[in-house]
Image 1 (tube, rainbow, N blue to C red):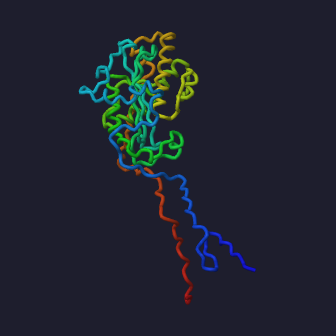
Image 2 (image 1 turned 90 degrees about the vertical axis):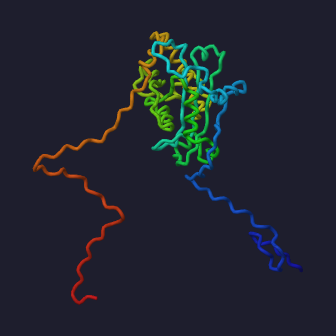
Image 3 (image 1 turned 90 degrees about the horizontal axis):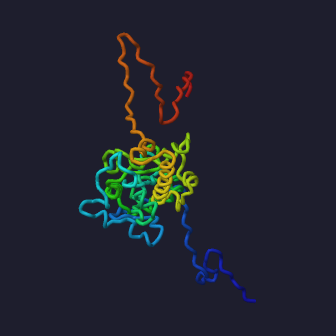
Length: 319
């Protein structure tokens, strides 16, 4: 009776010397947790991630032709408004940045929405929107990567920080910056990328909300959107956070006008402007008096392994 030889596992040849019945498959790719691919080369064009909320707003999203005017302005004066200017005549720009999540913080995305209070209430003139990913070679904190969903491989072809910050600077000329940050984190981050001081005046929606609602703790942007019934289309996307900040600002101004009589820019700055950063100076050592002993310092820790204990003396005649 003729015997039948079944192919061996893994595609090995039969004992009769025949060819393998099946070829070995490709080895599965090894999963490396906690690591991310490095970014490729930076680009020179804005790299949006979210885009406008509808096709009718596409012409107002990343309005590069307006930014490339000879005067560099976007339909407004380059001079900051005065404190007695009515609110309906002030240009505002809401800004939000996503970062690497650890010190020193680096931008990985910037979003901004420029608007006026009168145009945002009647809806005749859509807001101007600006957004772009930002190229960086720094490591992105894994927790921050889970929150905003940006990995370094997504930053290939995105413009460098100075290019994005310069575009935003031209986009926001003549407007008052608004952000949801009690210490003006986003505006100072952009100013650092431009190597210039932060804007002289800016507003914080968390401070305005704390004043109007009597809050003791800082309220988050998502909680503020729920309280004011503002739609937040995509949390932790820079452009969506900037749009939500602008919508919350509009609602807060409505409440302030009705309950506190806000009419001018100075009324907003009185309750919503973050304080100036305090310079941190190293402590100065007091000169020692004659005959005074030096203060006891902290013992220095030795690194590099355990200290070896002195070996016991060998007895005489021992080998």
